[in-house]
Length: 277
Ligand code: HEM
Image (cartoon, rainbow, N blue to C red; front, side):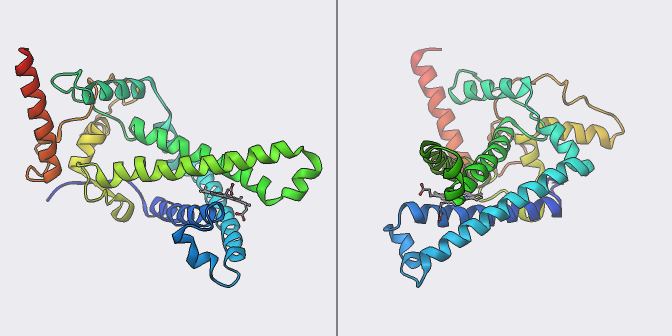
């Protein structure tokens, strides 16, 4: 049996599910206002009082997502796991090094690709999480300005309202794209987790997922099981870039996306031979 590693507790999975539902509702009900003639908006626009209900649901979901944000802050402050999460989520120099080395690996500058061992949260997850916190704050502030338009315009010039509306709209596009392109790649399409990283349902990561994305954290866990301690914050980067999954014992070698990796690697080798180095 493959080993499993706790990634998300029931409480954290509940927060994730809540975020997932509310964010989806906000995207649909928000963009429906901007693109009322789009084909996917017609069920809303053509329903009796559909657009009024849309506005109501958008605000309700907005309040729900901000309440969840408040709950999450309390969780970070008042629980042991939450405080540890803050420590592990802080950006460090190693994250910049990991990003740099990953780029070098992906652009075939590092030959052979360097192995990297990342902590409990890797640089991608830290960036995504910080973008989520910042984005929710911005959407909350600008959302309330749009909501209380009349009151706002009593005290502030019209251009400030227009700026808030532009920020709300463009941040909405950014956030939606970040989820579809960035988050969905990491948790669905990435060959190491495809068809899905199940942690949001099961709460666990596999040993293979731990090795590829959180090698340093895996070493810390193994050391602590032996009663030793590992200074993960002080640990130097063991190189950089991802571990090529086809060199991993834990991966499914027959998996078609892994074979794609092999094809790219073979192509690279062929080009190197052709260039004579
Ligand atoms: C975080 C996810 C959110 C997304 C993706 C989102 C998306 C959008 C979009 C695309 C619009 C249309 C903008 C335009 O027509 O220029 C909009 C409008 C609006 N949003 Fe949001 N929004 C979010 C959060 C919030 C929050 C947290 C609030 C409230 C606190 C809020 C309140 C409003 C209001 C009042 C409007 C304008 C009127 C209306 O929808 O009836 N939004 N939103």
